[in-house]
Amino acid sequence: MKKILALVLAVMLALLTFAGCGGQKTEADKPESTGKTLIMATNASFPPYEFKDGDAIVGIDAEIAGEIANKLGMELEIQDVKFDSIITGVQTGKFDIGMAGMTVTEERLKNVSFSDTYAKGVQVIIVKEDSEIAGPGDLDGAMIGVQQSTTGHIYASEQYGEDHITAFDTGNDAVQALVADKVAAVIIDNEPAKSYVASNPGLKILDTAYAEEDYAICVSKDNPELLDQINGALAELTADGTISRIIEKYIPAE
Ligand code: GLN
Image (cartoon, rainbow, N blue to C red; front, side, top):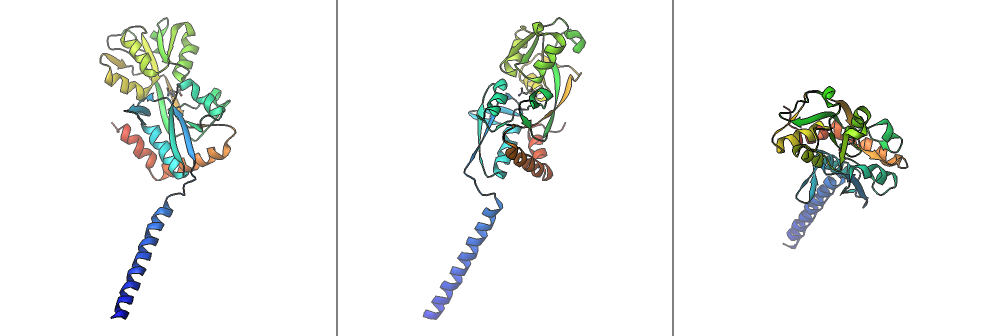
C-alpha cells in the first residue's frame, strides 16, 4: 500500500514538475523584463494616432509603442506634452522616444534620429462646408489655422507667409477656431482631419492632398542602440502583421 502511495506521489510530482516546465516555457517566449521604462512623449490630440480615452492615452502610436516596449522587455510610460516640445525633450534625454504621427523631415533629422517609417500621412485642408475655398490656390490672403511646429505649419508659413497663419497648441484648437470663423481653413494631417470633421458638423475636407509624408519614431542621436532595437522590433511587428492589424483597428479600410 505504502509502495502504491509512493508511486502515486511520484507520478503526481512528475506531473507537477512537467506542468511547471510548461508554464516556464510560455514565460520564456516573452522577452525577459529589463525592469526599465521606455518613456514616450506624444501630443494626445491627434486621433486616431493618439487621443485620450478617459485618463488613458490610446491610439495607433500608443499601441505600437506598447508592442515595441514589450519586445524590448520594458514598461511603456506615455507623457502628453506640447507637440513642439517633443523633439527638444528627446534631444535632452527627458524622453526616450517621441511618437506623435511625427513626419520625418530634413530639418528634424538635424536634431534627432528617426526610426524606419511605420505609417503614411497626407496634409489636407479643412474648410467650412459653404466655403468658397476649393483648393490650395484659394488660400492666398486667407487666415489659415495650424498646429504649432507641425509640418502643416511649416508648409503653410513657407507658402502663404507667417502673417496669414494662426498657430494653435493642438489640432483641435485650430479646428475650433475654424468653427468659430476665426480662421478660414485648417491645414492638418488627413486622419485627424477626418476625425475632427466627423465630430464637428458643418466642416469638409478638400479633395486636394497638400503633401505626402512618412511617420516615424524619433530617438536621440546619442542613443543609436535604442534606435536599432526599435527598428528591429518594428521589422518583426511589420512581418507578423501586428502593425497593419493595429492600423486597421483604428482606420478601417474603406
Ligand atoms: N505629421 C505632422 C508633423 O509631424 C503632425 C503631427 C502632429 O500634429 N502630432 O508635424
